[in-house]
Length: 98
Figure 1 (tube, helix red, strand yellow):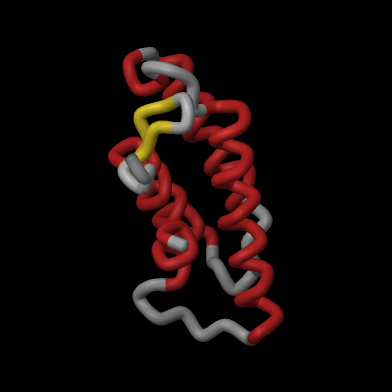
Figure 2 (cartoon, rainbow, N blue to C red; figure 1 turned 90 degrees about the horizontal axis):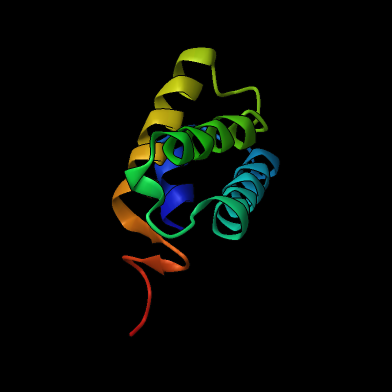
């Protein structure tokens, strides 16, 4: 939900279809990152950080076209920074229930 919020705030006027697309992209991104990219200590190596950034950019490229190239770049940066700050790797995150 946090990634969806990052992609839609401040308010972006989305149709209900576009909103569903954004939710789908946000979910796909988080699933892909958790499954393939957020390995132990991923933040310590430049190559793994680059792979995570590339994944963010690739998946977010599926956002509806209402996201202009400038807005897309901004959202990529915000989402990457959120992932960097919130997910330490191997399923560990700021959101994990202990």
